[in-house]
Image (tube, rainbow, N blue to C red; front, side):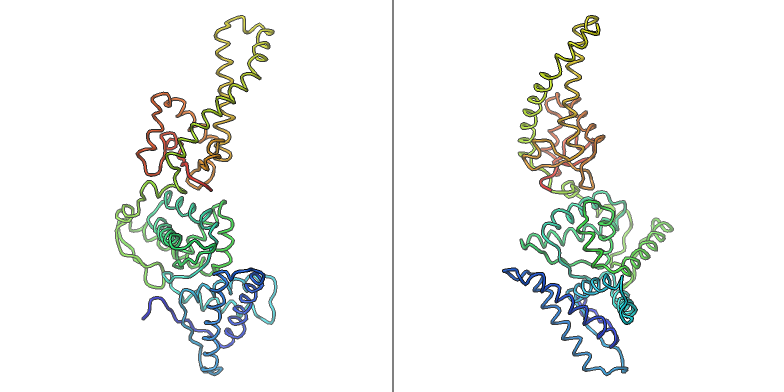
Length: 412
């Protein structure tokens, strides 16, 4: 038996009323999108070639099996399954508002035949634009891999991450063909739904992945958690067709095997040493220039106001130090804390294409940015101690990054 193919049975009615019209509608939609394009995009070629192949197989079965004599047996590979997912997803969306001649009922039966037959470990081919892969998919997978609470979550993220990076290394096309097990894709859809920075990825998966698959996956995960809770030291291997295939092993072994190296845990490509150094020098110059400017504007008005109120006369030297420290604190917040917390970038990091992010790949927020700055303020004068960590860590995190649970990554 070929593990890359699976046979699914459909009735004549489902084939003529649902499958063939859905595939033809997808073909027409893709044709309309690319008819003015100079080149034939890879995704369009894939839809056309796979559709022609699957339509020929469906029509051959319609001719070979008479109505009422049995079901049509259609052999599906990852490309055919992915194409059917896209075609039925489009038809399902259209049927949410209309039900022409009972089409919605026939669609429901067709969906059940397909998605309740295909096992979770079976791969599905799908396409994603290069910018969504780099900007949403990879950061989400790396962040999920780093913060996952159990081995199962890490395994999902690791499998998709490795296959995606392999595809990226082999292709620089604007659209990438990915191949993902059904269970991994169901997990990814859930992860994308709760990640605000993955809106485009979530929208595509919501269209591609049938709600039946999601419900089936949630049921499987719930049952798996109950077994783990009831048998904390036992191993669990899901039966074929009911969950992702895996080798039985203890949870401790799974945790050890899935523990990521430091560089992989970063929610993006770690910023290189030279970029961080250049950005740091740039920021230091820009900060002292801003401090001088703010001091020139605020120092004398504050001093005159203190003299008028009689405060400065009490302790002139101490009050002078207080004004200087207050201006330094205000300028530090303007330059170091607020921009990092709000956008993840100072001026120097923007120039050298770096960004400070949390485990979700988002700007860390004001509290984390302030904590990061305090560590630098307290320890930075000790021979630049916080920055020495960058040289010896694969994820290029300095001491203040570790303290604030943030990463400095390239691009985004």
